[in-house]
Length: 161
Image (cartoon, rainbow, N blue to C red):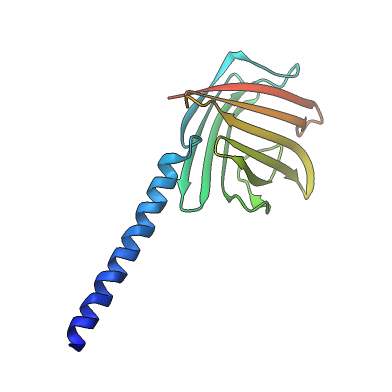
């Protein structure tokens, strides 16, 4: 009888682990931000002098966090930004971006994320990323300043690849 109880407990543990793994996979698949996004310069609006030549962002769900990698080609060269952050409203370190060195994420609804970007502890930009209901486009609005002190007032449209 004791061996049978141990066997039942083992099956329950295995099923529990499988459910957690499956839940993380469903979360990743159900988040419309997950995927590769390419900037459509023609359909975007930037403050004068602040538009990149091109930009691609990749959003990947890693458990309860979002890993974001962005490659932008600007007038002064290439900029590679990378961070992993959870939706806890806390500052998370950012690598490679001259304009901001931390970001905090807040999920507004299933299709919208708000970002607060800081440089040396001071808020320099706020952003809102909204994926269209059909999942094919993503609009990002950004206000604030860049590292050169230029005003940033952007409405950028990205197309999912």
